[in-house]
Length: 437
Image 1 (tube, rainbow, N blue to C red):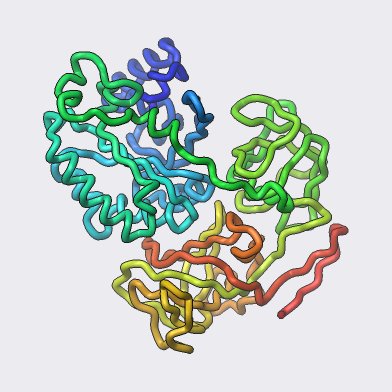
Image 2 (cartoon, rainbow, N blue to C red):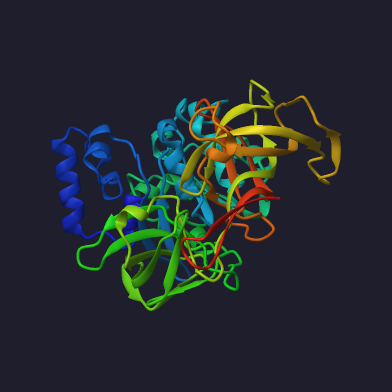
């Protein structure tokens, strides 16, 4: 991504030279391009992406916001936070023999990342087969990787019509923006297809929930220099305007939108699908947390502690049983929870119930389950847990997707169907009713 931004003029020569010198001095000269997006001291020292970095680029027909997500398995929660904000995926794989296999074999991060983004609603994916220069631009290696990934993508639910493959060498800058020059001679003999930018230019923006009430899950909170407290996130529904008062849930607080930034430009409003930064006033920053949701006081998001969901179980070794302790992920929030009831197994194609009250759920099964949040320990009563802002998938697709992890492994993904234990809040702050439906 660093090299692509440079080729498109988004990184100036002064910054490129500074990154090159700094990475060489740190003994990591091969990471010089990555330093543009890996900006923290720890990321640069360790040579890995740890948090989500935002950048933007323009193609002839598209304005693209990049969410550079971690690939390392230790930072999957951060990757989920980024993937939950994405419309499309750009998967970069290493063509070097052994490297691709390490990511693609069972338990590898290539497989998990594809399952995660598909489960979070992403259907368009571009696969950039990188470092082909390290295998002498071997077309058979490119086709081998494409063949393996193509089958897995279809199996994971990606439509073949929305899947593209492109051979590149990021370090040499080959086939990112163009396929010319001495370094591209061998590739150009057998590859006549589009460049990476050509494929980015053809991505289709999904339908936006503009007519829905405003829903903005907070992915980051920071102190603005002179404009109040800043929060960032992707708007999942509706429109937000400067001067508007918003409710912050969970909690009884509200705030006023002082400024809105999109792509580092100040704008009067922003709509669903936009990654925006809002500067808020009239609120104590302590009441703004990652995972909280901003919404209109007149149409607030429900807060749930128990809900039913339709899930698909991934390729797991240990089956899921009633009472299983899990970690529930919803946008940038992850909370302890329990699979409190196995309601039914379902036919994956039709959704028809095949068995009620199953004893266990094994790999590949589609099922309806009840999930109860807990307060940090399995012995805590479900209703003592703090509720999370959640909506059924039928109400808002972006607010109605969840991921389930256990023991550092993503075991299932799903969609909330109905909310059982809900906190119904009055439009006036401070009035809260517990309702069990």
